[in-house]
Length: 125
Figure 1 (cartoon, helix red, strand yellow):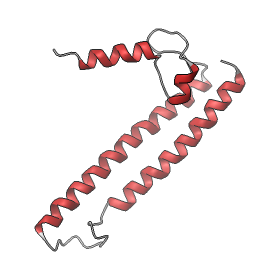
Figure 2 (tube, one colour):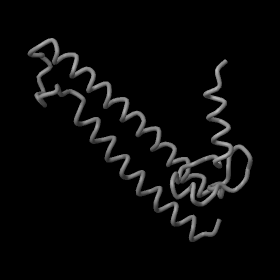
Figure 3 (cartoon, rainbow, N blue to C red):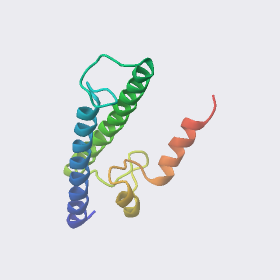
Figure 4 (cartoon, helix red, strand yellow):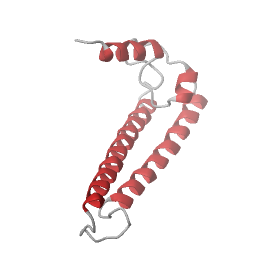
């Protein structure tokens, strides 16, 4: 991959990383230690509020965990740019299509290898 292409993807990855970091911080600060009404009190006013608060808190924590996973995938992609491994499929060592990298700049596999892996995961045992 040409240096100009690598720089374009590096810039895109850094922007995504920054957005994700802000989103993760936002999710954590919005939802930890607050109940549904935004009150910092941990004493619920009604039993249904406890369930709603717990569900919301769990939902946002799961969402933050998914965002963290994407964050680390982006960091790995940035490392691959530095080590000249970016854009190469980890399974077959072929070049990953540039359109795929445009859509998923932290992709580690080409589409055929990704599809194969997903089929293996979905296959009943």
